Amino acid sequence: MIKKIKFPSAQTLLIIIAALVAIGTWLIPAGSYDTLFYSDSEELFLRSSMGKTTTLPATQETLDALDIKLSLDNFLGGAINKPISIPGTFNYVDPNPQGFSEFIQAPVKGIIGASEIIFLVLFIGGLIGVINVTGAFESGIVSLTRILKGKEYLLIIFTTFIIALGGTTFGLGEETLAFIPILIPVFIAAKYDALVGIACIFLGSQVGVMCSTTNPFATIIASDAAGVNWTTGLNLRMVVFLICIVTTIVFILYYARKVRLSPEKSLIYDQRQEMNNLFGTGEVKAIPKLNLNLRLILFVFTLSFVVMIYGVSSLGWWFIEMSSVFLCAAILIGLLSRMKEEKFISSFCQGAGELLGVAFIIGIARGISILMADGLISDTILYHASTFTTGMNKGVFINSLFAIYNGLSFFIPSTSGMAVLTMPIMSPLGDSVNIGREMIVNAYMYGHGLFGIINPTGLILASLGVVKIGYDRWLKFIWPLLVIFAVILMLILTISVY
Image (cartoon, rainbow, N blue to C red; front, top):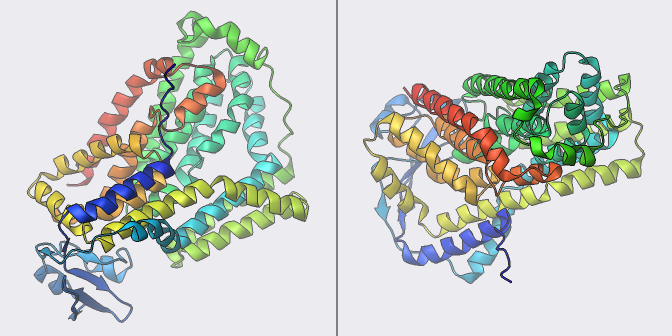
């Protein structure tokens, strides 16, 4: 009997890519651009491909003379905080191929190099671990279903929107698997089918992540890797989030109304008995009431992200301060819930541990960038890619990137892994066609997120598995929304680059 081939995990895939990159440093000619960077001394520094550094005045005239199509304010305000490649300065240089030793060391170097981002991820995981123990999430969502009795359509609106808020702000994803067995009986009791429940939970999360606003695992990591402040372009992302989540809710409501009026129109009508056997008769599981203490816990959790946003946008905070906010929030939630010290530590560590895989993904992906940079092939690849895009229409360029990210997400379903791996290469391409790097970040998020709705290497199969719904049923249900999203996102990307 032939065994079914299982697609490798994101970590394994990144290791394979790292090996291919190391081999590539022996095959791809080495090359380098001159780079420009800004320092606290309010001066610009030009480093040539030969290693010589020259000091230049920090003026717009300097940038214009170097054919850098960026405003000086991006440097002065900290929107660009990494060296940028200077167009037209590429030169081939002496090769520096990466051997077995460099290949083995690359993930370690990557983890060290990305330590600030990794600690932010782990502290967020710890916070989620602590709040999960309190039951505040479940209590908050289920209490809504009791309030909305007789107005069940509001259940769809609120559930989808609240989970989407989690996706767009802190990357709520895998955690939604825990909501499925709790909420599916609620939807069945409301005379909807299980597919409506899965759509509200999974699409809420996925669309939120696709339209990330403050999500550390997408927007912040990608912006950091692109060398721009994550608040750049935030207003547009908020508008796109609202457009897409309203579209999602309307789509689900349309299907749900058909099912409620004519149950035989359900795409899983033949599984109704199986659903009753799996989830009982639709009775809601006993969940604690949303008391004052749990309300305070949810308030503190939400407030931590508000404080983070304010600190980064107005106080100049970065990863250390952001991580500290989430640590303080976790401790305060532990105190509010009267959690014992041992329970708090174990919950925090367990939550952080569940995101340790994400942390390794970030480190390994950063290690790939280090291999490419040390092997002097990053700029060679960038040079030939930019040659391909030279003179390309802005709209064609940004939508080409959108399509590329749709395809790449099959191989790298991790939002953070994709960001750290591709942003250092893709983001400078925007400079060559006079597009802000924040738009490259948007093309990555929208492309990666759109395919994530049906990506078999992502979360959808796990979500469907909880309720025993076939992947083919999901594809039949979701394809109209995919087309609508593709049109919306491509139009927004096109309009926003002009």
